[in-house]
Length: 177
Image 1 (cartoon, rainbow, N blue to C red):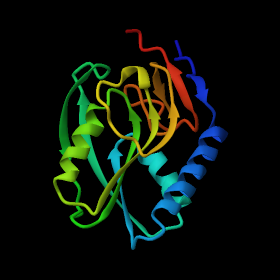
Image 2 (cartoon, rainbow, N blue to C red):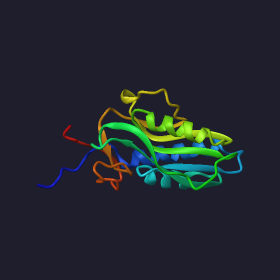
Image 3 (cartoon, one colour):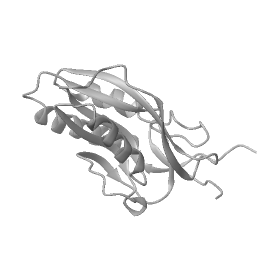
Image 4 (cartoon, one colour):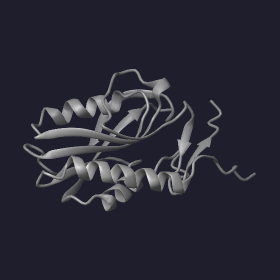
């Protein structure tokens, strides 16, 4: 039996419009700096990061970091672990963390603490999605795409079981749990 197509939560055009708006705001805020370093949190951020970076009008570089925050089930948050570190020394640089989704806030809180200790000139956050009902920590999001309900979402880089990342929209899947 074929899997059902995820129900559309945020359509492609609405995402495109919001990413353009975020790009304008970020470009205005970083207009006076020499360069901004976009730090993408793998794997879910890659489509959002690519689209956002193309919308920026300020000089920028891109690096990636990979963290694991889900336990063995893949759906229940666990301890945050660093899987792949940055290749760039961020000391004295203006850093913008680009996240796909902020669920409990634990991963972003961990990342902010880790990167702050490395002495960046500034450290801000940008997340495509946030689940306000799931937050366990008061984590700062400087640039936010959308608040969403507590459902499992896929598409636009997000996945469930490594499926549906390439959907052009944000969709809801039934996880069976």
